[in-house]
Amino acid sequence: MAKPRIYTTTALVLKYRNYGEADRFVTLLSRNLGQLQGFAKGVRRSTSKLTGHLELFYKVRITLAVGRNTDVVTEVQILKTLGKINNNLDTMSCALTIMELALNISTEGPGNENIYDLLDQTLNRLNITDESNVDKLLTYYQLNILFISGLSPEFKECVECGSVLKQQDQLYSAPAGGIICPKCAPKQTRSLVNLSVNAIKVLRFIGNSDVEDVEQLSVPKNVVSQINDVLNRHIDHHIDGKVRSRAFLKGIK
Amino acid sequence: MNSTNNGPIERLVSELHKLPGIGPKTAQRLAYYLVRISKDDASQLADAIHTVKEKIDFCSECFDITENNPCSICASDNRDKTRICVVEEPLDIRAVEKTRSYIGTYHVLHGAISPMNDVGPDDLRIDALLKRMKLLEVEEIIIATNPNVEGEATALYIQRLLEPFKVKITRPARGLPVGGDLEYADEITLSRAMEGRQAF
Image 1 (cartoon, each protein chain N blue to C red):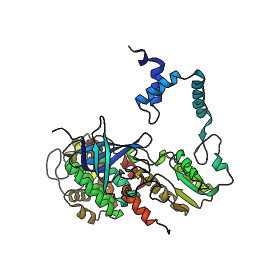
Image 2: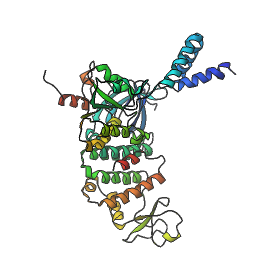
Image 3: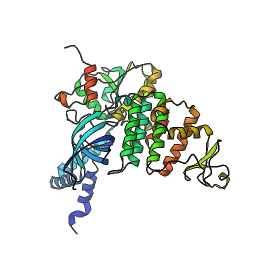
């Protein structure tokens, strides 16, 4: 069936780029249509009917008209603004990082439902959660988006010999995609990172838990930084495109 | 081969195309217009561009674009030096000045923090603002960055850095634009407008 000339969908605003005097190109993530590009004409003028409707983190009901190159935004209704994210630098930078990951991993067309749901859920939690839970939510999101895209790191078995890991400190390899047991480690030429037994326990717990349970978890700071280091290495090695927002997130800590 | 596809006209088109908001068609139209104008007019345009590049510089205090250093606002005795309005771009100063309701000084950041576009705090003139804070007796900092995510991130970052200085930090109020329709206002603007309502 041919695409209708005008279509409406519910989407999250992932990114925008200002163009010309008052226009903007918007990248959205729709649950059923995947990543979309829209051209919002005159949106930066204070008297435009679209002003303030296409900001980052917004969930919108958007109508687009099929254009020659890019579809044109004709109508927007805000469904959720998540205004509290913008009131805190830590939550905002975390939200930017998770949006950028969704931007790098999601694709055009159907098949992005799980990425959309995860992003929507994590943004909602970030909007209401305490500042101290930001790092845990980022870990939850990263582990789950890796799982959805089939790129989960292996924390239960050795990626070389397949043996079940013992409860002890281990070594992680980003190119190998998981933990390498002490027996296989000496044969490795690839760079290995230390991963404490506590960090592995936390990673397994977060990977199998609901977001509400993750928020209740009490994790020491050194474990959080170890987990983030491993996940960042994993994402950098396995996902195309640099996650630029992460540097800012690290910089403000 | 078409004679217009190479040489000086193509070069002119490609140079004009680099300007913001100028697409390939507009660049072509402008180039052909410039071909038709008199040599004197073309020289005046070229001279104006050349002069701007030669004479215009950044003000060493506020980083606005200026012909004289310091700029007329920073050099003026009539301006309130205890107030600094922090803006993203020099054009924002022109917009605030048009209101004639602000008599303090400015500080231009030349951008806003945009992590997704690789623009971090080090790419802005934030260090220069902190240096000014140490040298001057500032009472109020008005962070007038744009009311979008980048502007908010920049404002929150500056607010965090300015905490040790114990100055009054403010943001311009948000509300309904003159000439706009209430039904089209987004809910954040509308809620801020309601919060900041004043006695009639």
